[in-house]
Image 1: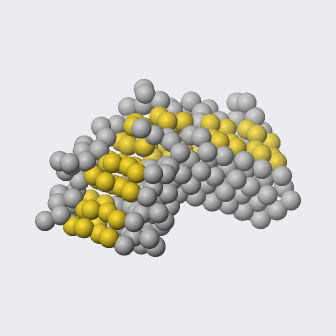
Image 2 (image 1 turned 180 degrees about the vertical axis):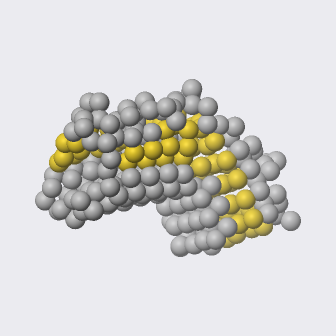
Length: 236
């Protein structure tokens, strides 16, 4: 909590000698800009380090390979993120949950995305993933695991309708949370098994949905706060 709640702190420059940062370091601060000096020894951005701050953009240093839970959560003004080249980059739970990100390109060195890392991004219309990434892919702007069997996140700013591809077997936690889609359908012949925790939570424009016969599990709060959802059909 070194600089937590410092509302008038607008920017910070972190020196090359820095090797560790405490959790909540700039939590809910007024910081809009942070500079990591070239060659910085920092390898981890800890939990809630910049959570709820006024950051508008961030460039992750090349040496950082671990971004802990909620590190940038609720940074409502955060629009762009650039990732460094550290091998085996890991993004843990809620890292960019409920931020203002408008453009996002995930690099080839990203090997782990935690639950809710990219959920609730209401200003994002499409994900992009480096084609050389062995673990994740983007198909038509939607984030999946590499073989497309798990739909991880729908950019919440996308509007209109969407058809879940037939290779999808599971819908990830919060995958459609805060979605602006008006209609979600499932491709004929899909072998969808599960809808994850809060998978369609607060999908504010969703009016109706038909659950495929293959589904065996619908997790907690899957359709909670869907105020306009008036019709749910379960296939026999």
